[in-house]
Length: 101
Image 1 (spheres, rainbow, N blue to C red):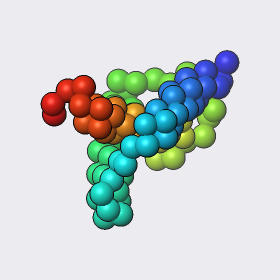
Image 2 (spheres, helix red, strand yellow):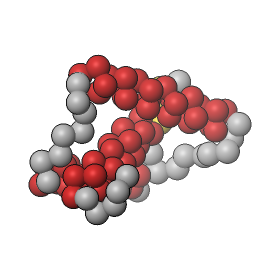
Image 3 (tube, rainbow, N blue to C red):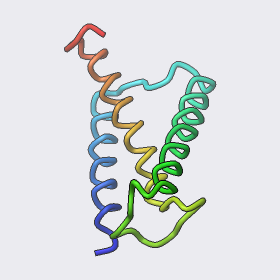
């Protein structure tokens, strides 16, 4: 099944979006902060993926077959989803005062 990886990512993303809007979380304080966060996240994520793929640490099966710089298109979405879900979780814990971070 070529969509397995993407389906899992979409499910996690939808849970994150639901949590984000359900709790009315403000993820960034400014547009500059948002841009810097995503640029830094994608720079590190792409470098990490590219290194692992070129060293053959990771082999991809069950992907759509579209690659950019040798990285499956699903991995770009994965980088976004992982960063987004951690940001939502961090803001949720701070917002709800479950933990004192």
